[in-house]
Length: 83
Image (cartoon, rainbow, N blue to C red):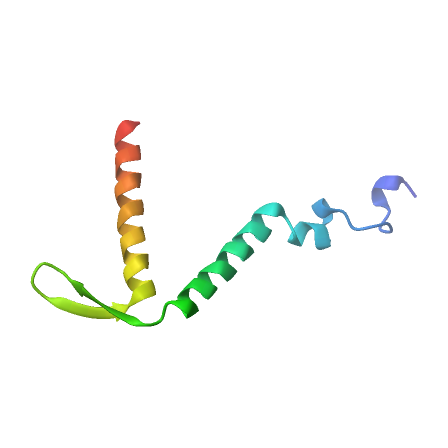
């Protein structure tokens, strides 16, 4: 039996072992997702926002998320225009 056809041995990250599940990128995404959930559950009170004429009441986390998304879209637009 050649070493290439052997099925025994320890699991390496390239063969789908535990190391493949715990990559630095996946750990980072999991930490960011956890922090996002904490942020949402800590900022559930409602806040009033005036949109030119109408005044709306939304949860604080939703207002901040909307503002962040608008900022990210503006940033992406200007970065794409530079290229």
